[in-house]
Structure formats: C-alpha cells, structure tokens
Length: 143
Image 1 (cartoon, one colour):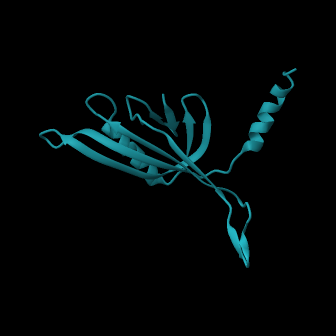
Image 2: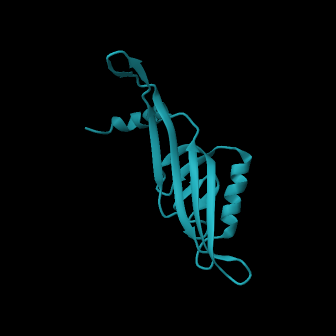
Image 3: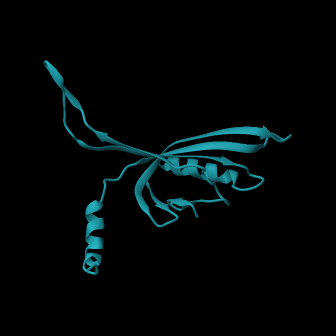
C-alpha cells in the first residue's frame, strides 16, 4: 500500500502514482504605505494541496475501475482521510480535480496507457493540539 484515501488504496493492483507533489501556502497580505514598502501581517496557514500524477497500464498493473471509483468518491463531495503506507496521517482531503490522457489504443478503442493526475485539497484544521497530548507521556521516558 502506497497510500489510502478513505477506503481507496493506492498501489500496483489499483492505481500507482509516480510522484507526490505537495504545495502549502501561508498568508501574508500587504497593506500599502506612503513612502515605505507595504506592511505585512501573518494571517495563518493558507491552502494545502497534494497532486498525484502517474501512469496506468491496465495490461500490467492497475485497473480502469480505480479512476471510476475516484470520480464516484469526488461526486459525493465528502472529505476523506489521507494516510500514507508508513502510517503518517495527513488529515481530511477532498478530491478537487482528476484528469486523464489515454494513448496507445487497441483495435477496440481500449487504451493501453492512461496518464492521470489527481489533485487533493485539505479541508480540516490542523490538530497539532491533539498530537501534543498523545506525545506527552512519551516525553517522560527520555532522560
């Protein structure tokens, strides 16, 4: 298992991504001042996005049903927990965009190669406060 989005498992039997691109923004809007550079104020964290591009080759690995499953999940509008295969929890994410490009066709029109890109948007607030309370007892074990 590479990663799980809700109950959808990313991996060779379903859909394997080739990259994980994450973009996190922080908000620092400026206020214009006369004769001086704009004043900046930190307003907090902005958007957090993950993009998963990859290639699906149905003859070798992966399933066409995986793309349909992700589209059905996106149609619900629900947020899904995102968990890496290492156990790292990334929070709740919605499917914001899914694109596919089909090439190398068989005689019946089925594609041999499908390039895809899945974009996820984080929708939950950061819960670092819960992480701290979980790790407190471990702090007592260190000398």
